[in-house]
Amino acid sequence: MTSRFYNAQKVKKITMARYITRVQLKDAVQRDLELLDSELQRESFTRVKLIRSSGKEPDPADPREYNRQGNVSLQEVTAAVYKAATLTGKKYSFTVMKEKGVISA
Image 1 (cartoon, rainbow, N blue to C red):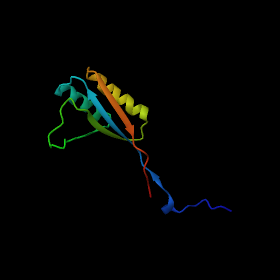
Image 2 (cartoon, one colour):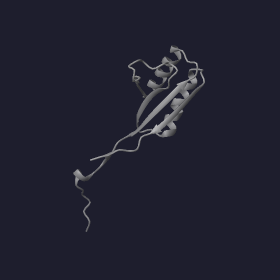
Image 3 (cartoon, rainbow, N blue to C red):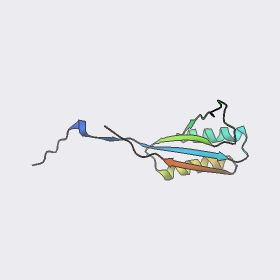
Image 4 (spheres, rainbow, N blue to C red):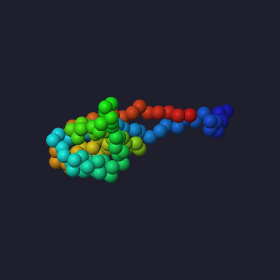
């Protein structure tokens, strides 16, 4: 007879999905970038502050990077980025990557 009980120490926990997103706005000014930041923050994205190897702040024309973690699908993340970028009124491109699931003991 098989026991219905299990050893709690052997149970593995799967963490929530984590997404890395890069967004680039064409011909953006500071106000456009601030709008993008606030819209993505409203959707639970966290901006990653990138610093060049020279120690200088990135150029506004450089892509901005954001992280999003949670029980959300790739489609939901993509839709949120699309909406935020569209609201700026600028031409844009973006990439969304889903990190591989992490299993911890």
